[in-house]
Amino acid sequence: MRKSFAKAWQWVPSLYFAQGFPYIIVIIVSTVIYKNLGLTNAQITFYTGWFYLPWVLKPLWSPFVDHLRTKRFWVVSTQVVMGVMLAAIGLTLPLDGYLKWSIIFFWLVAFSSATHDIAADGFYMLGLNEHLQSYFVGIRSTFWRVASIAGQGGLVYLSGLLIENEMPAARAWMFILAGAGVLYFAIGFYHMVVMPRPISDPEMKISNGREAIIEYFRTFVSFFKRNNIGLFILFVLFYRLGEAQLTKLAAPFLLDSREAGGLAFNNEQVGWAYGTVGVVGLVVGGILGGMATARHGLKFWIWPMALLMNLPDLAYVYLAYVQPENFVFIQAMIALEQFGYGFGFTAFTLYLIYFVQGNNKTSHYAIATGIMALGMMIPGMISGWIQEQLNYGMFFIWVFICTIPGLAMIPFLKIDSTFGKKK
Image (cartoon, rainbow, N blue to C red):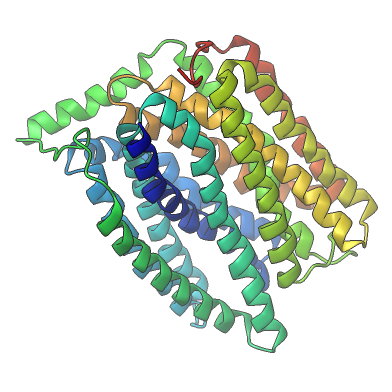
């Protein structure tokens, strides 16, 4: 157990940093890039909302990741590919027609990242026993959030420095994304060296096409035959309904002028307040959430975590109506909301893992997270339009109202009281 615990520290943190980094760039940093390049909120949320599509559709190819080669192979190969694609995005930004080409490359990164998620989550479940999965769920969330700091904190802050020094936004982001691509390419080679080769991750081969097709459909059928599948789907779709919209508009809200209802931050301030201080709050919440569930189990904690995830959304209602000028106070409000989100999201992640226990859990987890991505994609796509019809204050009230359906479903969830506890 001690050897497995120590070995896990060599790959779990870096694996989930590698999972989070491209996701943050595609879903969050892209909104800042397009805001800097002059797109409207409705355009930004609509275009970047489509970037969720590979995460929605990843169940369609998850059986192939599950039944061809090893999870380790897919992790390493997709990381190398994404390093190249991130650099390609940056190189398109100074060009005429940048919007079309950047969207194409963003989508290719999203496709590779979704494939990487399938393999990485599968490797996590195959390489760790149940207790270590519970223990490291907070750690993996933490390093996913470290990637968030590097992306929406470090990269956005750096872009602000370059833009403040009179470098055009397109050129600033070109250099930043090219550098991010080189870093991610190196991460792929690091994992090629350090990731273990567990016997639970054997080389998988399908001998013929008929066998592949049968196995493919069997995987989907077995998922939708799980007990309480209808309630599970509704819960996954609605639990993050509010957060799906808040996430898309948080950075534009901070960047917009006070006359437009925003807080008139520059990129450096957004990178620090939302992408660094806020994410630190989220990381601390994730760590404490993992420790809490490892001690008392998921069933004990799901209600407190759900409330702590959603109630702090009211911080944005306050910020929108009062528009305070104290930068430290604003950072504290953002950190409070992010702490609650980190603490509460731990329960959601662990519930997905709990639900897919059994055969084909890699593919079934991918299907579950695909449904989760759909729940983020559709509300996120229309959130910019909703905000433009309202104002920021009313929009954030709407966001809080949208948290109620997910909370209402919690009493009906069936959760083993021992799941996640130390045994």
